[in-house]
Image (cartoon, rainbow, N blue to C red; front, side, top):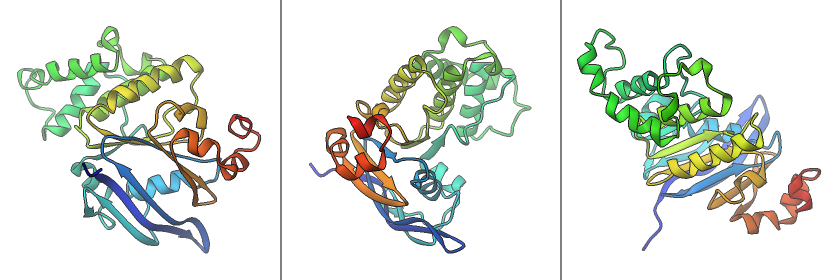
Length: 253
């Protein structure tokens, strides 16, 4: 059986006022996989992510989603096709409950996003699915808690739920572990693994150990270029990766 590539970029390059932040990056993300884009600070990870989600326009190169050239499409157009970026743009409403936040995302999917005059009877039809998504990210006991009162890690879980409400084909996670302690990291890793069932995940991360048991493929960037790619064993034993992470746990693994 042929492995299907759901998201791909070819020779992707981005230059800012003569400075090349990303240079000739070619990437293939397999359907149904969890794929990490990692590297030390300043490696170009976020720039690549912004290019793939069209928050930045490539200086050159091509982006393909489900085999279609989306290089010149806008972020909202790509999101409607099923390429949904979480954490950076899936804002939650702090004074709405967990259930209400997920219901708002479902309203968007159902074309009711701006129809706030709809009766409770109409909106309550979305409650069953909203509750299912809340339970899927282990927030059932916080169903009626306002988002502002959630811990940092549980806010991230809520953001995963609102992203899943949009029924994405590919979920893009921008440093989902940033600012978390070990216990919260373990919780979010489990949620990402659960969210990936039947979907594809591409995540930006700087910590090699976090993705070691989570990701099928790891692409390592340094100074805007890919220096290694493969599973954890392959990239962690690569001398260039060790040098790029010198001073971190990866350099001494």
